[in-house]
Image: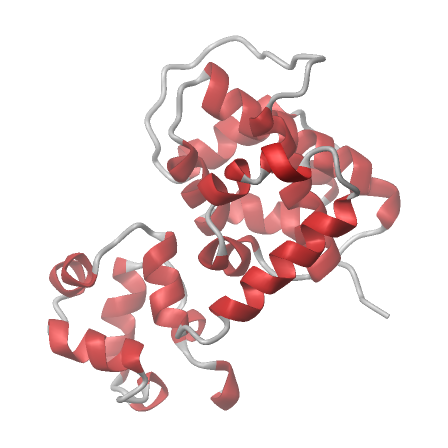
Length: 216
């Protein structure tokens, strides 16, 4: 039996909040879906939402959540009055469905969005929005299994929208070293603390987020 971060009692509200957050950020504030996905993957606000903090899954509306995540991720936008429409857009559905999958799977938003980006979830709307949510879950599980062969460094880099060259420059780590880590030819768990720190700083995460699970 799966253990969820928060009680199912809050699930419907949480889905509604994240659905409106996605719709408001993308449709009203004009934020690119990939940037909204990045904010969802890397911010403390999103982590609190995933953990079931009542303030995030029940105590604010989607517009407030969107602003908090975008501000924390330093995504620029032209603010507008709160807007939450009765007609549910594809953007709303993508946030609504993602909130369900995160609750169901117990994975972090970073783990999920490393496997399938928010843009890709949005593209699933035409096929899946009228299906039972379990069919969306099954497809997401397939994507997650396929992504499990990637290193955590690669997943994090993809989530941040960085190329290997970008990361090498920002972290001041040799490009070849990053390539060897991602190819599994060099064990990142055995690299120096200095290298791990520089990579984590460039990727805005904790050092342990880059370590492979087999050695955690």
